[in-house]
Length: 190
Image 1 (cartoon, one colour):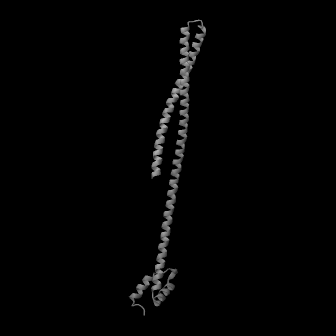
Image 2 (cartoon, helix red, strand yellow):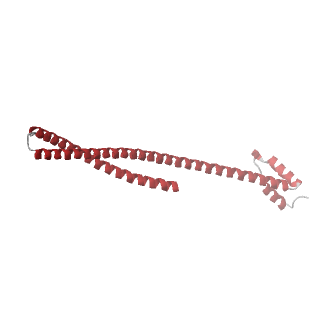
Image 3 (cartoon, helix red, strand yellow):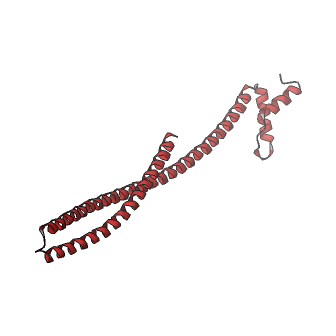
């Protein structure tokens, strides 16, 4: 019972964790695509700014400094987006690992169900065997009780029982108690 509860809680927690990981993975993948678009736009802007810097090399130092700052900021943004993309990839790998673990849990659950079925079949087999053994013992006890009654009879009564058995048709047995009762009714033997 405790193992069943453990497996149920384990599966429930695993399902919650997988749901969280899937939602996080979807969100991070969407962020990754947006980040890639931003990176492409930023790279294009950087190239345009570099072209502008080269064209206006003679321009004022202030404009050049502003452009350099813009380029520096854009490169920093690119670096941050690359770090975020790396984090997204790490989370994707973690998601795959959790998915693999969930498959192991499913396999474990299926094996556990098979073992329960096998246990039930074995238990039913033992019950049938126990019933058969009990029936065999009851037959042996009845036979032994009959022999005890026969042995408790006087020799004369035994002789009558043996003669009645010899006369019986088809080899069927005669109950000793009916013969004893019949002997008592006729007055007994001396």
